[in-house]
Amino acid sequence: QAMYDGKTTLPEFAPKERVRSWLLESWCAPDWTRAPFTPGQATFARFCREGGWDGGRIASVECLSQGAAAWVEVASLNTARQAPGAAAVGDVIFAVGGWNNPQSGIPLSSVEALDLSVGGGGWEQKAPMPTARHSLAVAASGTKLFAVGGYGGIGNSLDTLEIYESATDSWSAAAPMPTARDRLAAAIVGNTLFALGGYNDEGGHLDVVEAYDIEGGSW
Image (cartoon, rainbow, N blue to C red; front, side, top):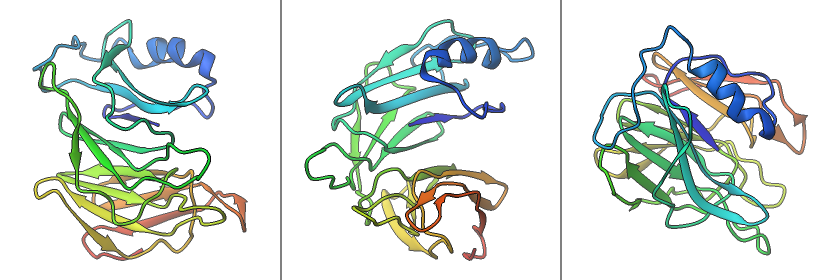
């Protein structure tokens, strides 16, 4: 899973072997204000990947800072995980859910956070999600994370929306999505959360886009 807190347009498909060259060519564009990846610096755009799969679940975390020519490895996750949700609140990045047991297929509810402004820091456990899941989407607005959709087990695509308040380390339930799905994307524009695409067993790959009014609390 990956997150990006700058502004750009993602390509429709970026094969693994082309990710690095595309990032360096497209994200480090001339009109950006370049900034080095330096612990303690609070304002810079960055792209981070957390966990994943390389023949086994992995815990490593790597970040590419704006203007950099190489990935920088930061502290590893406490729990190796595949298909977590990821988002940032300021300089704090979050790894949300995922799964790490291929035999059971049981998803994780655990949440970890890493403050990139603190050099040498490690991941901290945060309050777990009420609903364990992987292949979810997470988007941030202000001090809140919005965790939407995901996969809760065999044949169980979720319509769940849960909101994490980082200021109080607490979760609350919100109105479910009209369309249950996993492997979706999410983004927030103004006061609207968008849930885009995804997959479920009934509809297969989806082109559905649904919008959640954050202030009104409804889809």
